[in-house]
Image (cartoon, rainbow, N blue to C red; front, side, top):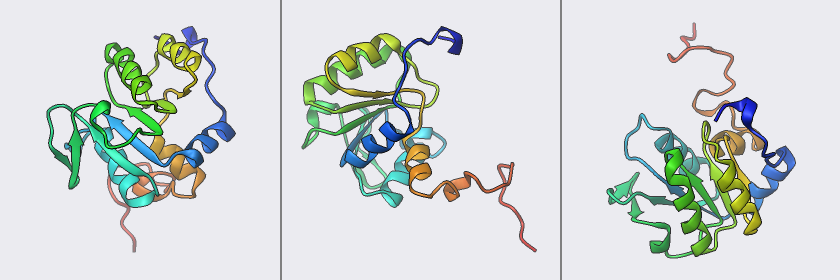
Length: 164
């Protein structure tokens, strides 16, 4: 779906900050053990730089970053406050169904992910919805950590800056 076709309006910065403040547990659906994947990068940040209890969901993995991986949201030991989704577009309705079944409070779709039908269904069921935003970036933005891991350094490069 192109940006021009988007009609759903997500929460503003103040609402996103409140969502993150109210969140204690995050389940990352589609978590990967590959360092090149965005979910791995986000997981590393959340484990090292946030207060959240982070759970990983992936039906084919057993461990990520020394943490156990669960096959589904239903297998978690507690209901997650926030379900962060790293899945392809056609999988998102099923993730919403799982999130509703376990009593999650927020459905958060990662950068580049947008599903208006799911957003409307989730809101109608009482969930907060955030789409096309990164939990890591939003958390860092609100907590002064955008310099971590290459954000807001003033350097436009994938290589480290050489200091004289």
